[in-house]
Amino acid sequence: MYFDIGRPLGKGKFGNVYLARERQTKFILALKVLFKKQLEKAGVEHQLRREVEIQSHLRHPNILRLFGYFHDATRVYLILEYAPKGELYSELQRRGQFPEDISATYIMELADALNYCHTKKVIHRDIKPENLLLGGNGELKIADFGWSVHTPSSRRSTLCGTLDYLPPEMIEGKTHDEKVDLWSLGVLCYEFLVGKPPFEAKTHEETYRRISRVEYTYPVQVNISAGAKDLIAKLLKHNPMHRLPIQGVLMHPWVVQCSTKKPTTLSSEEHRQ
Image 1 (cartoon, helix red, strand yellow):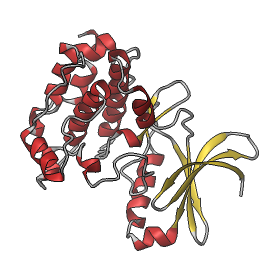
Image 2 (cartoon, helix red, strand yellow; image 1 turned 30 degrees about the horizontal axis):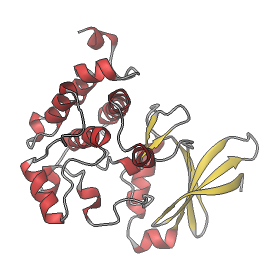
Image 3 (tube, one colour; image 1 turned 180 degrees about the vertical axis):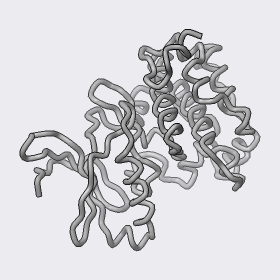
């Protein structure tokens, strides 16, 4: 083993994530240890292999790097970038909600990473706060690539869990494409500003109903700008074809004016338009 293992960073259904240090270089990273038996029992080894293949080729400042992987008789080890500031979800819980500049910056970073993914024909399909981590400078990092190996965080132990983020076409069992990620962006933008997702309801059925009717309102006590509401409305469209495309998100006036950072995937010509 070329790594010194430190404290656990998270627990998952198939194993755990540990802080680790490469012996020679002293480089700090995260080591995800998955048990082959559990992966086999759940029938997800193929999916894992595919996801590892995908993520190891992605290079973007807002996507958690997968440096490599190895395995022994009983375990698979994924060598991942360490995100020192932890889960975005914990940060949102701690603060209640995010101010507009922070929300716009996170949305810009997410849209930038997704724009990069979509050009590489990768759809994430599982964008939610638990799958987003924060780097050393507070920058957002997409972590789990739709792996069936999430860290079940403190949140959403109920079935209604991820349902909050599913677009109408997925709950209605229709075909779906990269436009599902646009819907998730709208849901997240709302959640960042309000503190909870827009379609949250007491029952599974009620959440389903709200999503398929795109029924959401803003709480009176939270002051949200017209620009933010405009972006959310343009993303939360029942028909995927009507959603604002990802470049449109990066060029949306609210994002451009409020975000404290600039996207890496837009060419300077697009910026000037």
